[in-house]
Image 1: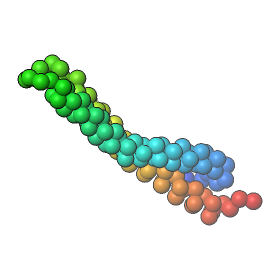
Image 2: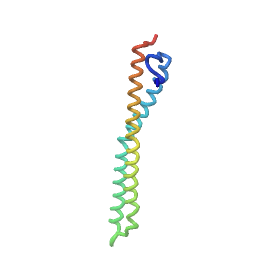
Image 3: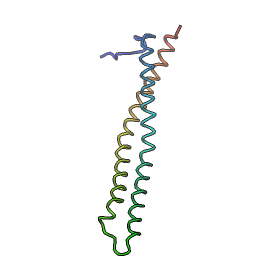
Image 4: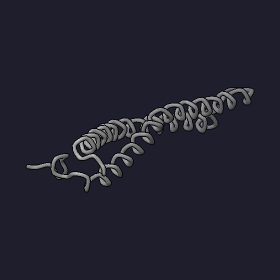
Amino acid sequence: MNAPYTAQESGSDQLPYFTKSKKFWGWVAAVSGIMVVASPFLGIAGTVVGMLRTFEGIGQQADKPVPADLADGISVALLTTAWGLVISSIAVPVFVVALIIYLKRNKSLRTMLVENPPG
C-alpha cells in the first residue's frame, strides 16, 4: 500500500498541505503541553483551597466539628485533584501523538524542500 503523500511523488504541490498540517500539529502539541504542565498545579491549588476551607470550618466550631459542615471543603479538594488527574491523563497522550506527527511533518517538509527547492 502506497503512502498518500511521499516526498518523491508529491513535489511542491503538496507543500501547502504539509505546511498547514505542521502548523496545526505544532499548535496541538503546544496547547496539550501547557495542559500537561498546568493541570497538576490547578489540581493542587484546588486541593489546598479545599483543605483550607475544611480547617477553617474546624476552627470556627467551638465544640466537635460536624462532618456535614466539613464536607464542602473536602469535596472541593477531592474534585479538583480528580479533575487535575483526568486532564493530565488525557493531555499526555495527546501531547505525545501531536509531537510525533509534528516531527514527521517537519521531516517531510525538509525532504520536499531539499528534493524540490522552491523557485
